[in-house]
Length: 286
Ligand code: G3H
Ligand code: ZN
Image (cartoon, rainbow, N blue to C red; front, side, top):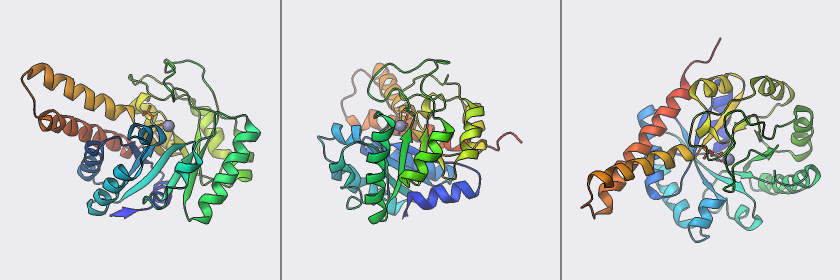
């Protein structure tokens, strides 16, 4: 069934676990994420980024409609989230398209501008009954810039500033920069667990990890134990999809029917989804 992101995050926080949120681009992504969550018997968030909307000729509705129908028929609870929104026009389409939550991304702006834009977005979102996530201390690798390698310093979220930001903006959750980076194709990011501990102590909203594809399993488990409540994954699905298609076509150079290679791609993505949900469900260090 279709549920709200707010309830999945609240439930995860109460259980001291995390809900996985996967970025969807095609119908195969939608089907694979739901199949993977069903096999793991866990709730899941389907998220559509502004970049994915741009890829779909700037249109949100075709993918959103498919996601809503698939979610309604899923055997596990599924929520819809609009991810990395910078455009006010897109933000305002969220609710009518079936989304219960948005991530408003003004992290590229100087602090005061990020706060002002985020507060306006949060006021609007709450008036619509939407749950809203924002970002402070930019997680890199978003717009095709090279991903940070293993121990590159990168941006970090300051706990005191984060506390003021959450209080003054009124957001429901915060994406924090603790060492992960978007679009990594190796699982080699090192997280700053001490900083995460200080952020958890300073804030009373759920914390969101972006760029989770690049985070090794043990680091993910420790991050959830340290207070991460929503784990965003995108690139891991692209890796699974593209790897499966590349292997299939190399082995079947005569293939023509797109269903042949999309089937193996979908299966590979579903496997990746179930695997990651399994990692998040693993008991963390005592
Ligand atoms: O908001 C989306 C996530 O941060 C995805 O990051 O593609 O590096 O897993 P990723
Ligand atoms: Zn992200």
